[in-house]
Image (cartoon, rainbow, N blue to C red; front, side, top):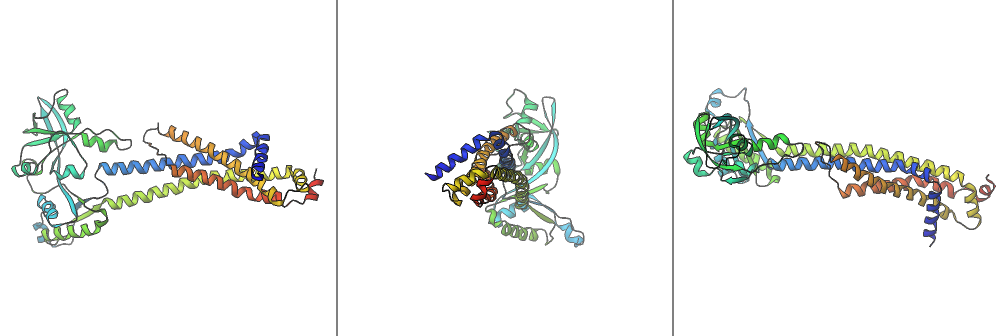
Length: 405
């Protein structure tokens, strides 16, 4: 019962000085609100980055690029063909840690239909391209091994290409010309909606044409080389093992010339994590400073309250209140201020997050753990900065307090 009595007295004291209490709470309110808002922005940025990584194939994807050799044997350099379609076949057959390999030949050509021309990015690929890059076919089919073997004149188009060239016509089964060579459209990709902050990536997914890699090499590039050699591992934890396996295969095929380099998304993922951690710490410090300012305000007001209520403290001690009773009363008042301020700060923080969601390029994400962390921090701040004034009040000499005017 004593606890409820002390809490009641604390609430009465706070209600008796409403303006002072509100001004004291303001620092706590702003501190909690800023922590929640800033953490939500960082969390949203993290989720947006992860979604984008998933859109383009996930963290298990690896790219094999060209590596310039300056001091190598020129004869061996001339013998090595660089990255080829045959390299991809060798990797998938000999590396048990590799899930998919996607050799890609890139170019930019003009597609024509009924006199209308449209410039498009064109890719010669295999069916692995669809799997590695998370593409989906909405109508028709994709490239098969049979198409690659026969060097079929078929193509698959994105929705933007379909809209630009065909308007209201349904493109599936239509014959088109790509650089004056006819092709039949056998598939249309799923339309990808724009995601905030990643507009260019998804625009590309809607605005491209693919064909069998062998057809592209025969009819457009005239050589065996590929523009990109991408692969996806079965287990991201075995990435280093995969690199070594692929390296051994390519060295044998390239006459032991290391004219290739690996670019893993694991490194990019690690950099992204470090960047997010840095932002979290930095923004957390900013919000934490706001809360500390609020805590100092609580201590300042509580010290002023101790001075103003010295005679009251003396009377309470004279009628039997212990040091603990006085200490507990002032401590409860400080905690009540910080708890109420923390709750109001949570409300303001959620409101700010809602406002941020209307801004372009910002997709804040609310995390319950961050809300609880900010609120708990505000309570701890009130408790910490309330201890000194409470101890000062408890240690006042009752006789001197009764004489205080």
